[in-house]
Structures are given as C-alpha cells and as structure tokens.
Length: 342
Image (cartoon, rainbow, N blue to C red; front, side, top):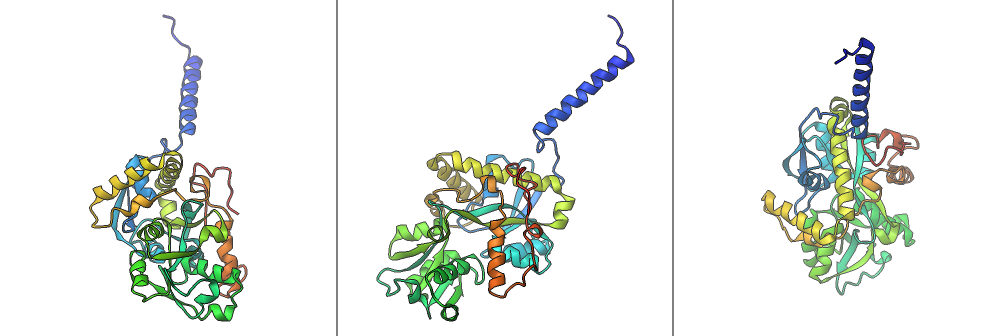
C-alpha cells in the first residue's frame, strides 16, 4: 500500500474535525456536557411541573431534579432561587418584574404557565351567590394564591375592563390562601369569591356548587404569564446545565401539545403516583392542554412589558425603572434562536 503524504494526512484530519464539528452543531445540546448534574427545586402539591414531565420523558438526562419540598407561592419560589435554597424557581411574570426592579440578579429563561381556550384560570362564586357582575365584587373578600401577583392582576383587570373605579377597586380585599384550600374556604363562606388556575379550577367546576364569573382567556386571550428563572451567577457558572434544562422543558411542552390527551394524563398520573408525596392524585385527571403561549415556552416581549406598564400606571414602578431586556432571555431555548430579547 502506498504511504500517505503528510499533506494527505492533514487533509484527512481536517475533514474528520470538520465532520465532528458538523455533528456537534447539528445537535448542540448533546455536544455540551452539563456542569451541574442535579437541580434543586420546589414542587406544587397535586401538580406535575413541566421540568418533572421532561425528566420523566428522559429529556433532561443526565441532569436530575432534586425535589426539596413544595411551595405555595411563586414569589416565595423565586426568592428561594435568589437566596440559593433552590437552583431554579418559577413565578408570575409580574412578580419577576418586581424582583428585577429591586436589583435581584435573576433571568427568566422559559415560560411554563399560560392560558388558552382549553386551560385557563377563573373567578368563582358559590352557586346562588348575589355576586353576578364586577361591580358586585366591591367591598368583597376575594381569595387568591398570593396578593399582588397574577390572580390579583386578573381580578383587577376584570374590574377595570368592567368600568369599576380605582377607588372602588381599592375596597376589594384580597385574601391569601393555598390553591388547594381556596375552594373549601369559599364553601364555608369565609370568602365571597376565589380565583383558581388551570386544573384546580376545572376540578372545582366538576365537583359542583360553584359558578364561573369570568376567565383569564375570556379577558386576554391566549398568552403566557409565568416563567422559570435562574440567577445570573448560576447561568454564568453552569450555562450548559441551564441550556439542558430549557431544552428539555421546551421539548416536554411540545410533546404535551402533540400527544393525545389520554396519553398525557396517564403519564401525569404515573408521575404523581410514583413520587409518594401524600397528595391528591386525581387532580391531574383534569389536565386539558399545556396552556403555554409561545412554542416551546419561548418568551415574548409582551409577556413582561404588560406588567411593567401595569406597575408604572399604578405607581409601583417608575417609568424606565426596568426594561424587558433586563428580565429575560431566549438564548437557551431551541425554539427561540430567531427571537431576540428586546
């Protein structure tokens, strides 16, 4: 066999390197080794979070999730992220806006909750309640998960769109309680109305005894309103881990979109039963859709600018105090490569 010349060997080596680079660029996530292989997080009772679904589908491997307990509040969850008690947390986008405005070093990386025709949140009263319209809520006690967060924003938007004055809106009392307890408080008449989100809302409707006044989808259409955040420091130190998390969660969102509902529900049931957290496993039966606005959880400017404008109008923030570019990034989302943060 004729010996190869040095130039031929170099050419062959160059072709091999180019070929490996092409393979890596075709599958960038697989080519990037995560720096951290475990992510600490808080769950929600009786719910399967999208990252939990992603892990069960094998989309996060080799990264694993480490459940450290449940939260009952988005603001608490992202505050735990800031303090380092967990590695990531999720909350209403307005809560993230306020956190960033307070100079917290966090960045939203993917949407995980939203409203659509099938999955949405709603404002309820007891059957037979004298409350029939927005004006009837003036002077009433309304149960929400967290005052000042998404549910209060939606109720306030409903009141404003119905022509209720700012002065009268101020007469509404928002009472905090865990989502799983709100229906019970309504039935005991300790609250006049409650706002519930997604599958917990649908379970209340199915159980009977309550009437739906309005939904967020009726008010605002399809959109995303909550995101997962990491601290800037965590992202800087673990960019491949964050990319894997976002990629896996985005893929789980799209898996849930294209998979028949019965198959998704069966998967959610399996996850809840296997984790043994002493929770109501029947709630996942009311899952209808993924309910996230953008493809793969891609964040849009409006997902945050809406709440910046709302807070400026209500004097919570000063004009220009925070910009959307300070708050989120789609750089890790495989579905958001062409979407630039603004």
